[in-house]
Length: 146
Image (tube, one colour):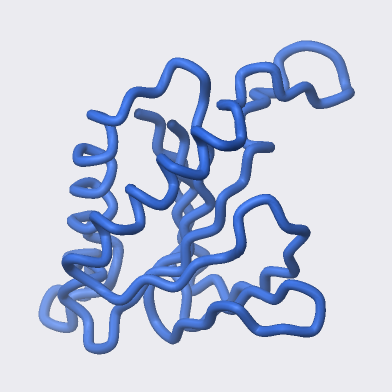
């Protein structure tokens, strides 16, 4: 499982002309499931995302707050199978390591359900072509592998 996390002041996702998800301050999660991933990884990944201290603590002026610590903090989760290509060989991306779509969708939904227990979660539409607008704040971006 690979998750690219971006700290944002706002983000949204559209499918065609329809706005399907929108958040204010929080995190955008670009989520990729790979063939070797098992469901037990979801708890670990959700804890890491929810506890990632990447928002400024006003007292220390350092990254000391998590998405659940900030006022109105929320998540926009986008399934993105293209993250399975690491770029090591050749110039044409290959996605052989990506999980089969039906199983990946199930894992994605389960991951979002776990996150929703703590913060608001908006989502893209699995398997659809999406336009994602991200206002990266910092910029702050992390790539997490589980």
